[in-house]
Image (cartoon, rainbow over the protein chains, first blue to last red):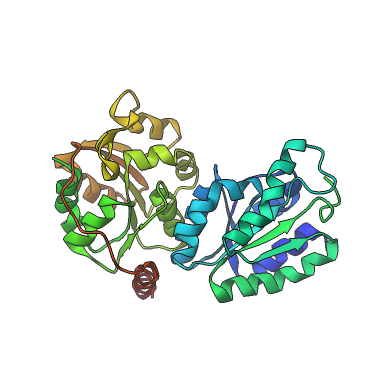
Length: 165
Length: 187
C-alpha cells in the first residue's frame, strides 16, 4: 500500500469523513486520494483559518474533521487554533507538509521551517514528525489520540518522508 | 434601524433554528435578547461564522443560519467561493451589513463604500443572493427558510450599537449545549 493510500485508509478507519485541504506540492498525491475517496467529503479551502472554521462546524455537526496544509499555515492560523479549536476544545488532526527541511529546493521555505516546531510548542499542540516512510504507521494511533483528547494535533511530514517530490 | 433592532425583529423567525453567531456585539445581543441552546456564540475568531455554519450544514440535516457582518465577511472573503461551490440547501448566510466594524467603534468598512457584498457573492457563484433592507429582514429570512435552498442574504442597516453585557458562559459549555441540542433534533 502506498503512503498516500495508507493515510487515507487510516483516516477512513478512524471515521474521519470531512477533510479540508490547502494544497502543497508534497501533499498533491494524498489530496488526490482524498478527492477520490467515497467515504470522505473533500472541501478545499482558500485559506487555512477558513478551513479550521469549516472543521469546527463539521465536528459540531457530528462528523470527524481533518485539515491538510503546509507548515506556512501555522503562521496564518495561530489565532484560530487558540480562540476556536483550543478554546472550545475541539479535535483537529492537522496533516502538515513540513517544507524547508532537508531536500528543500526553495530557500524561503526554510524561513518558516525554523519557526514551525517552536510555534507548535508555544501553542501546546502535540506534535509528531514523520521523517522515515515507516513513521506513517503511527498515524492510526495519532488519530485515536486526537479524538480522545479533543485537541488540535500536528503531524509534520518532511521531504525525506515523501521521498523528495 | 440598527443591527440590534434587526436581530430583535428576527427572533420569532430564527429562535428555534440553529444559529452560528458572529463574534462581538452580534453574539452578545443575541445572548441578551434570546439565549437558546440552538445558539453557538463565537467568543473570538473574527471572520469564521460563515465557515463554521457551512461546515455544520454540510455535516448534518438541520437548518443552520450563520449571522455574519460585512466586516467579518471582508475579513474572510475566501468563504464566498467555498460556499458557492459546496451547496448546502440547509444553510443560510445572513450578512448584516451596516457598513461598519460595529464591535470596535463603528469604523467604516469598504462594504459601506464602493464594494457591494451582494455583487461579490453573485460573482463568486452563489446562486440565491438576496439584498434586503433592515425592515424586511424577518420576512426575507423566513422566505429563505421556506425555500429549502442555500441562500445568502445581505441585509442593509444603519450603523450603531446598544450597550450589552459580555458573554461569560464558558466556551465548552456553549459548544456542548449546542451539540447536545443538535444531536437530540437529529435523533
